[in-house]
Length: 112
Image 1 (spheres, rainbow, N blue to C red):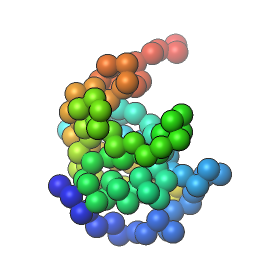
Image 2: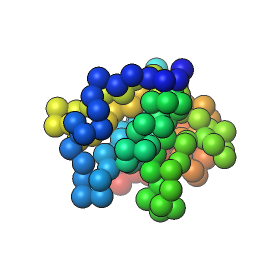
Image 3: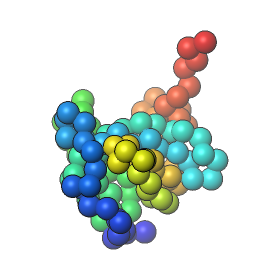
Image 4: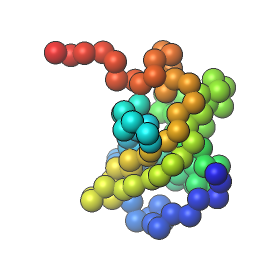
């Protein structure tokens, strides 16, 4: 899947103070929450172009297409914006682990 067409342009989104939008990532089959990441405009447009989830790495300060080095790619199945236009929900086909620790999801540490 590539060259996806968005119904909204980047200028329609409400950005955080860093000029980004948080992205909640779910498995498209199970709805399991896999991770939370951030997109800037370049990451969003690259995601649409490639059909693969691309983010802005705040720690490395660079564009990051998920799975480029690990092989744990996230293929876009759907992108939905919330009612405030400030958070994206991405449903993906996850290949391998979503978390850099090797876990399927980044949410595996219980607090309670």
